[in-house]
Image (cartoon, rainbow, N blue to C red):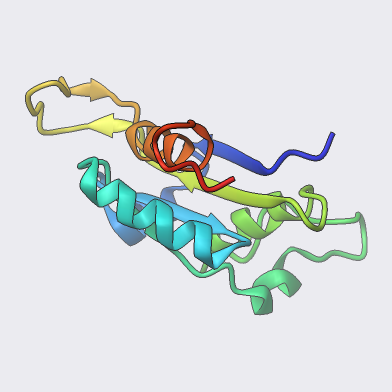
Length: 140
């Protein structure tokens, strides 16, 4: 199948948590326009996602002579190398967003109790509504 947009959520790396903390979801995408849109919508939804660089220069860190890819880079840019690893499984031409988050609400805000959290969900829902729900200004 060839989806318009592929989105994955994960609590993949502590490196993402170290980069953006517990309140923000680290976001990687192979489409900067969609990533900017998601970042804007995430702020409106009070579910912040921040675009991180999908720096192709670090791809060498997951290359290995023993396999096609190594799933752990040099740990200096662990969130980026993890995203690059996942990106290698996305077919060319498919728009992709990877959300790496802590999935933990520490403050216990109203409507968001302390504990396991659905980080990024409200932001992605806003994006999907904008792009795909008729009557809401669907773009696609």
